[in-house]
Length: 130
Image 1 (cartoon, rainbow, N blue to C red):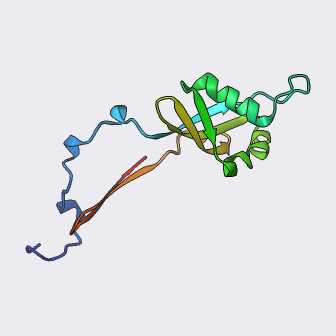
Image 2 (cartoon, rainbow, N blue to C red):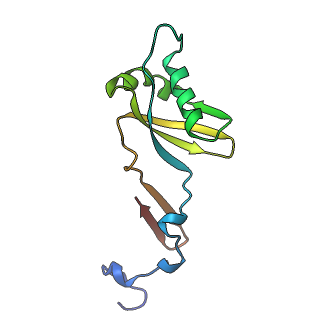
């Protein structure tokens, strides 16, 4: 295409040298998904759904604090009973703090997507990752 004109040939435009991007084994995403099996509630143990969920998270991640927002807390009871306690949690991992972003019934750990957007002065670039 002539300089200064738009083109529909997206393959000819290389804004990012793909050799500079990390390989999948080098990714360190801020959010991660983890499938957990939450033990069934028993009257004699006296643990709430939240107690059983957070205890299982602590057993599987290296965090000193697990934070859970209110909208996620409101869904825990139904989700734990949907697939016999098998859940996928989406977590934001920091050094010592694990923030639970979402909880889903069943195993959805393979469905983890990300996007990076660079808004420049004259261009907009995005990179989608699964």
